Amino acid sequence: MTVKIAIDGPAGAGKSTVAKKLAKLLNYTYIDTGAMYRAITYKTIQQGINLTEENKIADIVQSADIILEGEKIFLDGKDISEEIRKPEVSEKVSLVSKIPKVREILVQKQRKIAEGKNVVMDGRDIGTVVLPDAQFKFYLTASLEERAKRRYSEFKTKNVNVSYYEVLKEIENRDTIDSQRDTSPLKIAEDSIVIDTTYLSEEEVLEKLYNIIKEGL
Ligand code: C5P
Image (cartoon, rainbow, N blue to C red; front, side, top):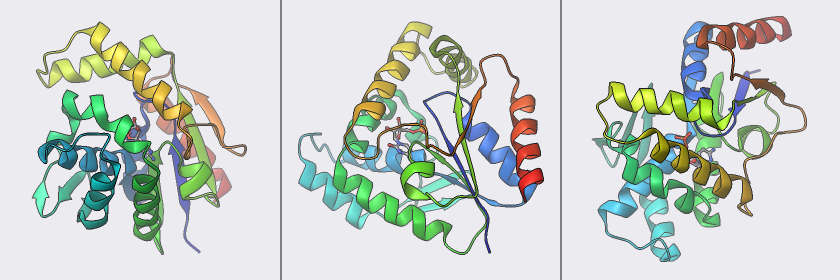
């Protein structure tokens, strides 16, 4: 039997950093589902499609060739790992992600990628919708200010020119759309372990998750 680990939570809670490290420690496959929604958003922007043109966006998802390779993501053969982190993608991704057809197709793809493998998957609806039978479900959260602070320093190190306030507003806006959408909104799965990371270091979060998993395996 394979082991599935679901990590959900709002933007900037440290999910992907911890998920990547955890996958490495356990020698499991890491699956960044947010990157898939970002890839579709990127393609939508590239093709100049308006966010109201849901049918056209649905066509894009149907035909998009998305490949996750470790921490890299390829769309139609092109490495777009850096492009998908740009502010213009972050700004629009939640609006693309709330389109039911987009979710339907990406959820199918995500389940397929996870099939027959031990995985650590991070996102918003992994424990609730994508992998409801996951043996381990975590919900990572932190105060909005702390999450914005972390994202802001990340941008600073990458020389992205945004203010702390812009980052905070962007995260807040995304969280609102992600938790209020009709299809698979961001919410805590009944059987998930909630960890508030506001006052915890990355190492402490990783250790907590690792210990819980080791005990449960
Ligand atoms: O994880 P990340 O912050 O990169 O996700 C970007 C966006 O993709 C989220 O704000 C959300 O709108 C969407 N997403 C989602 N469901 C997932 C993962 C991400 O709707 N499982």
